[in-house]
Length: 220
Length: 220
Image (cartoon, rainbow over all chains, first blue to last red; front, side, top):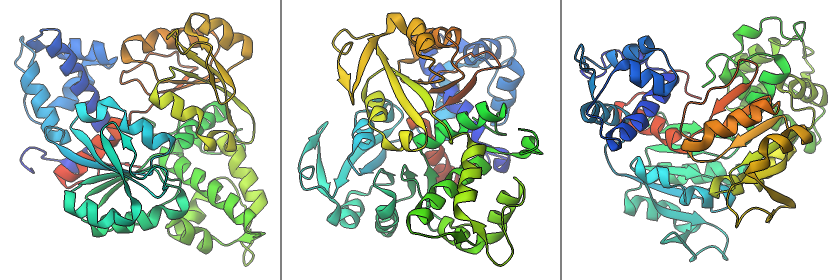
């Protein structure tokens, strides 16, 4: 991939965030029947400057044609490829509480290529129950079933006290990436990508900003 | 606050994230009966280096006593104050779908001082229904009720197409901060703090990392 991303180290989280937004806007433009889009129009829809849009897109090579703008389908495909959402990802959710259940019903996941195919819980009342067509498996079989089904990403929504055990199991089973909702710093080997999410911390960034009258650096 | 935060511009999102984690660990240490904690012990629990812990905490003045470590209660209180979670925040959720409902049941919010006190939806089947003791209000009365109840933060989980209208209403009503789950860039005046959250984008950071074998810069 190095020819496509000549300077990967410069790509920050906020750039990826904007690429995700462009992808969504391009999908909308495609639906609306647009064949091309200018950096000006894209900027207007994203509430960004045209210079920012051109900078972000130039990053990944030359897409645009002066005077015509960007080809909507081509640009969308290119961004999708860069983000890795031009394919089918097999995802499992571990912990079917309030957040876990909400995620199973979250339509945008499959729209972006993330397909929840396995659910796990340790609660006997939940094991065997059906959520959107998926039967909840017993957490006891976590490692075995994740490996057998070739699950690549897992979403962890179990309590903090047990999260590391789940992670150790899925890492052994060959998972490549973990989105963690448990409020704990998890240990993963360097070949596994980990991202932490915590709803309450999201509000803490905001309370920090209000109280200190200051937005934290790099806030998305 | 400037005396407490001598160099606020240096505080990044990842520092705030670690402060949030320290706060949680200190709560746990307090429950476990610890009166003091060393930077080494704190680092071990957070899976960080002691140097990182000392750097983060020195940032906010001198807390520790050489040989004794940090006073658990005092350090927790100080971090709580910095994060603005030593008080009662009045929060509203706008849009009571899957994610919205899950957030209403999310216990960690109130534990950190974020109290959901109002819910809004435009669906006649939802208006008047009771979620965890809160009756869902009609979105028509959004501005009026937010202002009357002195709500300071709102969580937006409505579709992207209507999110900006909701934001304009709550900004007029005096809200100070917005956590946005709608996949759209919202416009807010400079005195209102905005944070965007998107579950699917969280997975996109991970798919990017897997496909490009590279973690984005500043990834939390």
